[in-house]
Image (tube, rainbow, N blue to C red):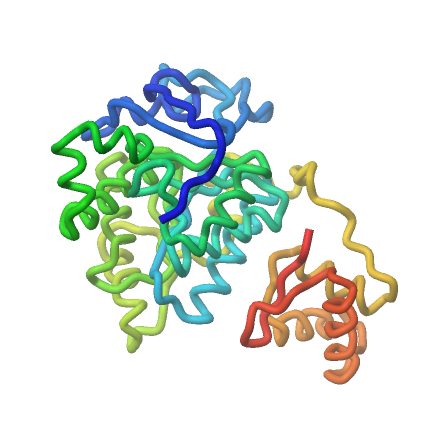
Length: 331
C-alpha cells in the first residue's frame, strides 16, 4: 500500500457540517482523518430544513453508489450512468475506492465535473488497492475527499490493539466492513449496483436501513450470482432503481432546473463528433446505445461513420476506450 504525500487533516465528526451526522450513528467514529477539502454548502438548500438540526442548512446532497468488485458490464454501465447523472446535478458521490462498482462511481463523478468522496478501510496514508492511487490523487486534485477513521500508519503502530487488528487478515476484513457504516452515514441515499449474497455492499445497505436512509437497488438478471443481493434487497424494503430522476426527486432536486457549473460545452470538430460527445455527456457510455439514441433522434449515422468518428475522437484525446465498446469523456 502506498501513501499520498499531502497534509493529513484531523477532525472529530462535529467539526464539519459535512461529517456532523456521523456523530449520531452507531459506533460513532472518535476521529476522522482526510486528504482534500470538505464539500461546500449547496446554496439550493440554504432555506430548506436540514435532516439533522445539528448539521445546519445547506449541506450538499450525498448519494453512495457501491456494489460488487467483480461487476459485469451491465453493472459497470449502470453505476457509471447513475453516478455521472447525479454528479452532473451537483450531488456528492460517496464510495469506497474499491475495485469494480466503487471505482466506476468515483470515475463517473469526476468525468461529470462533480465532487466525490472515498472512504477507506485502511489507515489514511495507505491507499488500497494501490493501483487506485492515481484515482485517489485525482479525487483530491478535483476538490474531493479521501477519508478514514484510522490515522497514518506510523500513528497506528503506537496503538498495539489497533496494530494487531490492521495486521491480521480477519481484522482488515472487519475494518472494511466497519468502514461501510461511514459510507452510508455520510449519505442521504444509498444505491446498490450488483451484489452477491455475501457482498460488502449488502453490509452497507444494512447500515443504511439502520440509519433510516433510503436504499435503492438496481434489479438484475435472476440467474446471475452478481444480482442475488440486489434482488433480495428489493424484497426487504429497497426501492427498485429505474431512472436517476427518481433519486433526484427524493433529494429535492429538479434536474430540469439544475446544470453543473463545471460541465463544459461538448462540441466537436464535426456534427458527428458533437453528437457522440453530447451522448457521452448525458452519461451514456455504451457505443451501441449511443448510436441507437442518435438514430432515434432522427439523425442518420451508419456504423461505419460512427466507428470512424469514435476513432477520430480518440486520436484527438476527447474520449478514451473502457473496453467492450464503452467510451469515456476525457476532461
